[in-house]
Image (tube, rainbow, N blue to C red; front, side):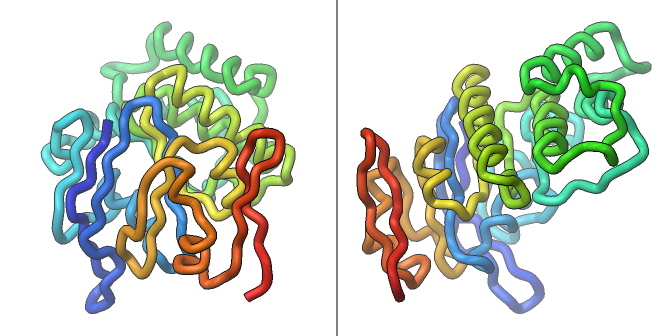
Length: 251
């Protein structure tokens, strides 16, 4: 599980996050929601110490992240950025990078087996020798997800993993993330803009507004009033075939 206690962060004199707290259990997929500039991406990069919070504490299974060395941190927390730099490397070599926190003298047969197994799990094994530059957006996101998962993390951070994908790949990606989170008991925090994708595939919902936590809970917290307050737009929550959806109306 992960716990954030009163996190604060600023860029210079500009306050980005103020007194942000949340707790998520193993196996949960938590949507991080809010307008652009609300502090969503900053929040998750504070968790893996890309950025250092000025205030507060972050704990994974009760252990403070700030006390972890880089290797231990990588064994506990994995991160998939919104945009990934393409390089002249193969899919398999890219995924093998996820095993670096466990390597001592080189790549072991166990490392290789785990990478191949994960590529099979995300449906990318047949592309293992293909260059990353030859991959589509959806394929590349699955490769990056596989690389993060072979770190065997307790917490997986995803920054807008569906932003550049077509609807089919968006739903495939989020379905895969939820399935793996539940199956491997990984706590997933996912920054996402599409409320309906979040409603369909996430277990809990954390809304940020102006750098502060606005509300947090299961699907019951996603209401017309919250949508109005957080996004400044009219939205109606309806149910179709047993699933909740958000219908956006006029301002």
